[in-house]
Image 1 (cartoon, one colour):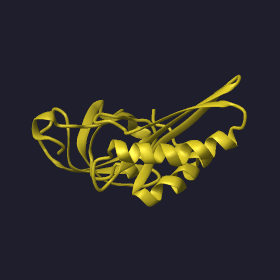
Image 2 (cartoon, helix red, strand yellow):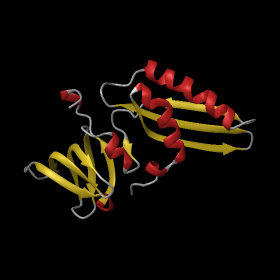
Image 3 (cartoon, rainbow, N blue to C red):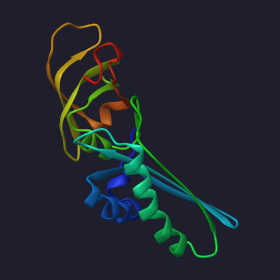
Image 4 (tube, rainbow, N blue to C red):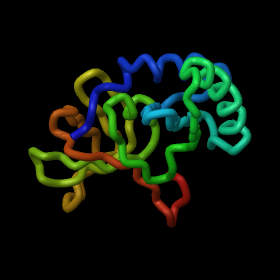
Length: 163
């Protein structure tokens, strides 16, 4: 099931404030502390164009100094990456971040995948445009409550490029 934690995460908000001036959005940010070291993973996305290594390197250079001070004596291992072409969506907030992208969502009530382009998302549901349930030919808008989505994944059509 999808989580609903990222929108209230202080870490996501802090990193968003650092990278938003570069036109980037935070998809995911996590930290874990083990004895004398800390590991941080940050996944970033750019809406208007594909994210590139220069974006990721510049973001790393913004994030690392701040969190190496915040974490104090701990050794910080920071990974800054892009979401990838076929990312498994983990949090409901990601539907807002990936607005305009194609997605596959497994509907528990229909026992089928809904495939379509993310048109909008609010606190309780996502609306897919040009959508259909696999096994059916009818296309149209589909609104799925987040409570009905067991899993979701970005849909990349290899033969058509990034549709």
